[in-house]
Image (cartoon, rainbow, N blue to C red; front, side, top):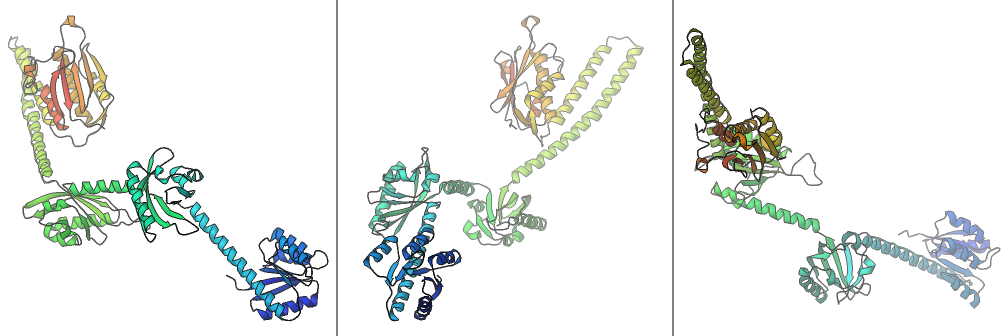
Length: 599
């Protein structure tokens, strides 16, 4: 607060003005005096001066002291105004007080009057300054309450609202004025009323404590919102007279806590080893699954450096790869790698997924607070993959042998048969040609079986309906009809899916066709819950043959190779699917392919 008191003294007597200035400044080193001879001059001075108090005579030419006061109050209602006049009467004093004068002081002889005047000026100014400060404080507190993100309420000992802050409207949707006088417990969730009553009773019983509870409060739209309520007893405070409650919306915080609880439950019960490290490579958390691999508990490991385990458990190459991957992860990159872990029970292959932890809000976004590492045991999976690779290699070699070592003699025999037909006319030639054609078909089917039996490694979204229409166009279907009852996209390799459908369509047309009088054959492709089916309305397959139709060489046709449905099974298994046969709704055959993943 500025300690100087600036006084504007108005009096038409110049000698008295000078005298007043001299004695006031002698009486108090805080007071500074500026003087004007009339009300008009004083009003002009007020426009640009910082004045703490006005001291004015009553009888002056032009406007008198009370008229001057009226003009001052119009523009400066709060400036202290002392009427310092030689004309003293009860009537003037009454008029001055009615007009709102701060103080009325009659001129006297002697120096003592200036000492008393100085005291009254300082007292009036200090009182005004205190009022201004208090008004500012009140305004600040009022604005803090009105704009607080917390709901602030005061309740009486009977739990009724005596004050509700405006913040209840954006948070819960209620008009604050309309809630005053309501029972506060009417807004509390039924399951939280008992604990709310208990906490409020504690606060009322002991004014020295603050009680806190998380409760659900009703909203204007009929829903419930989580708030953290803190209550303190101010019943004996005459300015409050109740229990003050601060309630903060914690709906998002509760949701995050619940989500975190689920994550913690997953991490603690997952069979993979999950651990976190900070940017100094110190292990900050590890889940209980680590005990399945080493004779240690999480508490034995937390606080250790990752480096302490690298030399003991990893080979030289894997150690360097691990270090490089973890450094990249701490720099903000996702990393994945396989490492061989040396354990007392043998070597285990772990697939490591490294993900950076997000930084704090005030941290550099290009940095990380650490990394989370998920270690998954893939020993059996990698062994299966190696076996599958060896199997695929053998299938490739078998296909090469079939293609080269069998097809070449068949080609030679076919050419020789053509030359023989030119030289002789024998009844034995047509059967030989038929046998050679069958051998060619067998070779093609065996090659297809070898090629299509390898696992699908890169499936992608394929429209089942489009694949069916395309496959239908490549098969000799005669006057048969195709109906597609699906709009599903599945994950598959499109060429091998087409081959599977072609073989099923060809089987339906060749083996499912009815007699000429039975009408046109219809083949339908439709959805199953976890896959799709291919059904026809033909003669069907005997139930006793269901277990044999996928066997190598099984065929009900003399011209068939018996590999068509085995190829279907190989194509399905290459995708990770299963295939089975049953009756269709129309009495024909229905092949069901299951285990299909939707795109």
